[in-house]
Length: 550
Image 1: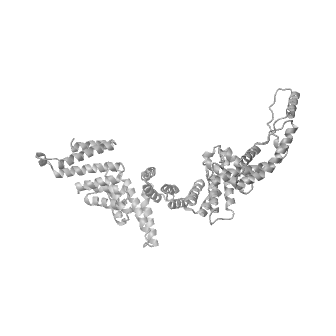
Image 2: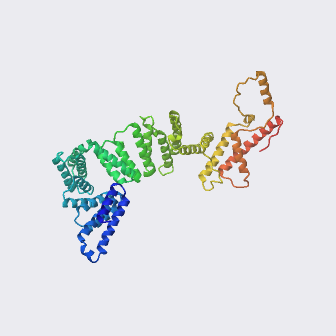
Image 3: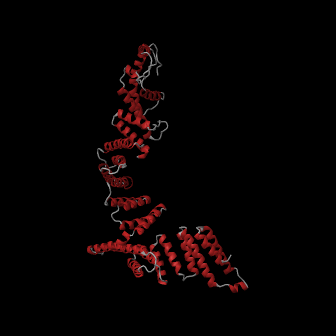
């Protein structure tokens, strides 16, 4: 297969999207050209034409570079175009292709110089002029950029529709970048106030056309979404900054800027973009969400706890204007966490710990309110595990304030949600988790002691009322009286049994060294247990049976 046939076949495969197969044909063409240079002898060497061979080699390298460019391999494509120029130095197309590679690589200065070389060699298209002007702007070559972009406008106005194509996209591009040049010049140090104002007004005039060009704006939107999805964050930031110039009052563009900075891990610019969004008009619910996002950046990434608390407070104080607004519980949770963090720093205030517990309680309560109002579950509001962890924090906080009944209630709620206190022998090296386990039983012990005074009442179980039956009423009453007179096993409440099982488990470990909380449990429970067992024995004796002593 000849070189021309290989190139033709590769071109067809590229059009069909088969880039790897096309590349194989071009590499075969390169091998053929290499053989022509090195492997010919005798009469064949007399037919060898070095100039023709170089032209074909340059073309094959260009086609290989185009395939790499289509594949997104800009650095590899650049090498191919450089090899093409070495084989045939005076091919203008290579300058445009290299400029495109540099532009995609973010090397705007090099891209501008390559485009400029092409423009000096031949008459450029409007597209090349636009790219050259854009790269010049971003490289800081404002005068050169203005010259090339003005040429675009002159060409558009001179054609007056005679070219037959839609040239509005080029006109919008040129006007936008000319406006951008005015903005850049207005920010220079040597520009006076009146001059800067005049440049800003002139920029606004340039922006008028692209702002009204719906297809132009749509192309920016589409390219931005594609760049974010592909992980090309610098490209996305450039496009979004352009949209911010075109739509200066649109808070949504600044929110998207903040999102891209978040994806990049640039916290400083993230909160600044959110602040700019807050300077634009937003509905109450949208503004609450923005304050919440900025507060979380301040708290979790920047470490500015004071500003974080202010943002969370603004969210809580602001009335939502949308039914599905769920910012309130998250704001309470985040503010509570921030208060708790501040309580452990040098800037702590006296009531930080109590404020944190208060916010955690409001978080749990507001979640319940939303669940009832919207008939949804926890996962529709936030991570269910987050709610459970907050309830455990509330329980521990109540315990340390000696509010043992409240602590027991919160611990019970957490357990009903699937939480399991980790036994001390399992959490040997996790002091915090061991402590919580002891807090559960000690708070429950305090609850039992306070709620169930030592008397026969502690052993009386409550039952649901019996359903109506067709039995004779007098006969039914007689049966109930006989049931009451029957002797039976005397058993206390389940809460009592839970604490007592922990007590007996600890006693079984003796002799050993107990923790402070374990000692408190033993000291609290032992005298109470002795009195309860006395009552049990008395009741068992009355009923004619003696229950097993535990």
